[in-house]
Length: 232
Image (cartoon, rainbow, N blue to C red; front, top):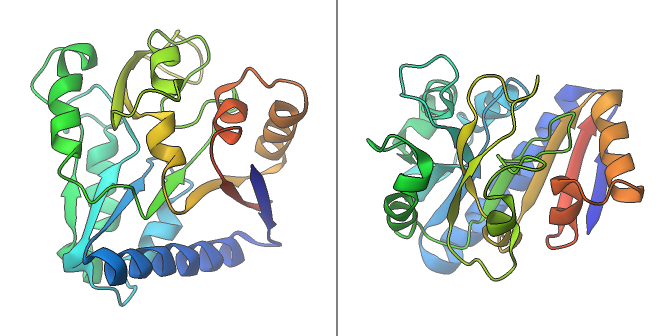
């Protein structure tokens, strides 16, 4: 199910999302002593990370993990782990525990067992998951027609993570090998936020929900309660 939260400015959107994410993390800490937050890479969430880095939370009790990763080394310019650490491991949030996905394995299919073991140490279900969405209707690394997509989307797949190989497109770039949270893991989170900006992304989501229901974002919306945070 989708709940829309629309804002006149991106600054207002960031403020609301920072407040809602902080509340979700605080609820989890109060309930179980720890909280896990899954975050996405890309330029859109950077202002949120800057705001969250100054949030007065018990960061030492918060685990920050990736929603997905390109299967590249951490010195690669498109590494989500490096982006996460550079953008969020600052100021107060530097006290958090950060967890990446990349291992020494040559491809994500060989690595998935180790990554799932790594993620099993998190305080699951996630208190909050921050998603983005591409113009092709993908979210996390759940790309249309990707190898491994059906396994990653299966309601019966309770593993935290799944390996995928995307079909090459303008959206994927050259990094086709991916690791991603499974749809069931995302759906189990207490707070699932989809942060998108601009009219194009809004129209993509509206079409996916109305007619292009085969797209991963639409399929995930059938499994999860997703709050959309949108601004022009």
